[in-house]
Image 1 (cartoon, helix red, strand yellow):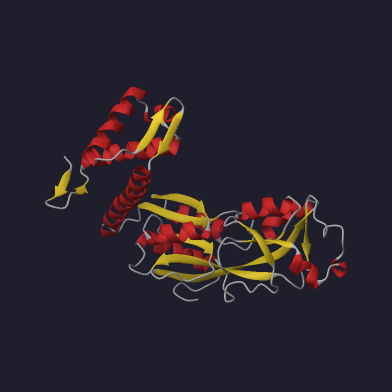
Image 2 (tube, rainbow, N blue to C red):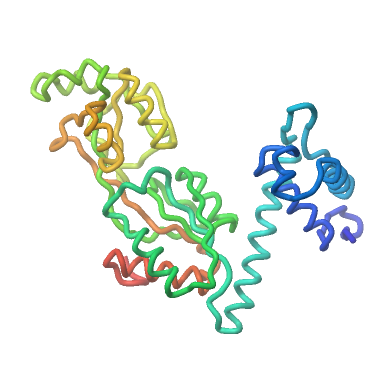
Length: 314
């Protein structure tokens, strides 16, 4: 039964609420009641009844639903985020019990920045392979996202660790250097610069061209952009930046490994590759408030070893 702290109305979920919250998360992940039927293996009427029970217990309406409509309410968004943190904490409890029994079993919640899979310098693939062999009882749950999203999820415990380019240092997080990623300036095939040689493009031309930023401020200590670009568009995700470059209206920095597929197809070309390229630090992000779990520490140490960096060092 659900419990409330006297005089404060604070809900403490018990087993029935946890079961209903699992159902709620499944519905959201499936995109609605209809799509969740096969996943939950129950009828839509049963799902509807159980959702009504959850809303009654919590005292808020979680979603708008109707004919072909499923949309979370603001309260539903809050409950979903809280449920994510709750289940992350429950899994951490399971990990702690496993560690107490000196058995490496449980879950590793790993965040990885978007569109980094083509980076040959990344030690992730090799590390994941080694980790799967050394810790076969660990369930690896991978989340792909942008820098800000990954930092937020590590900070609130939804992720144990994340691997990402980071342009800032947020209080409560530790950033351990892993490797560096090469970034180069690009234009698309439809852009006026594409048919010109670098010698035919002046510094003033580059600074006047429409430029795509990364959706967040980049301190000089992270990536020192060599010119004062005319930023007129932005995206926090590399795929968004790539779309804008391919439109032929903008120039932008992209990871060299990521842009290479379009360079090979003749859809993009690098600009002043030997002059205006930059490096971006890729870091391991962890929480500073607590030591990593045995599972997370094992993975991080393996990651650093694969990258040729001593665990515990820079």
